[in-house]
Image 1: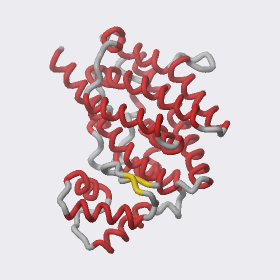
Image 2: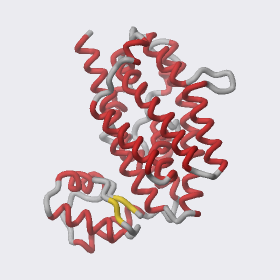
Image 3: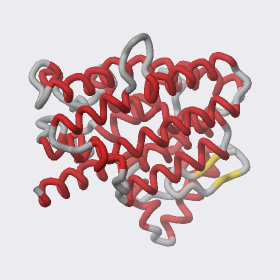
Image 4: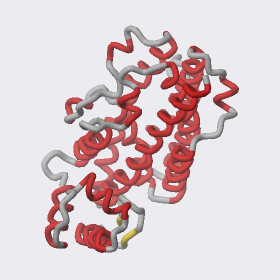
Length: 298
């Protein structure tokens, strides 16, 4: 099985020709969603169907470096290139309002994150996957090895810049966040657990301190922030994510590559990753938009 990374239409096979033919047909009908995806990922040049198929074959090829590195490099190209996500730009010199927007939208993300991990844990019989997801849930909501839960650190970061805990908890997420959360909830509760796993755990690459090793022009934030952040609570939260997400994403991608190979799901996993990445892009934009709302209000 496979799906279109632009619109989510499902296909019964995992052939590259099926995906490229779908895109060719949608481009001929001037569908903006597919054309924008092609422009961003394949080429801005109009081409014949056979040429487009060759481009897709090249795009999906992970034979040289492995599936894990393919995911890392595709993620970097989407978020940390010459024209990075607007929230990545915000984080290069974060303002109080940037942090406020971060806290508010990310609180809703973390609530869904824990549910997503629990769905994966409950829908697989592989013990190492179950343990991995259990550890994720513990760190995010309950703390681990004497360390505070990430959700508590998030709320403390908000309070340190003047954002009351109750205001965050009672807030309504912005539309781009809502769309993303609905997508992840559906995938994790209803699709194959491996598709769910790549859909959420690949997103932890956003805070991987090694992204420049994969070709990134930017990092999530400048490391100097950890020495001189806006507040000590901001430093504490960013440092926790900076240290945890590096090994989280690395460990998850190793597991994903292992089981995608065993289950013959590599192509499917690739497309689910690409689809999820676009929702995550919009979710990060929502953090930026929320920050601007706080700035206008205050």
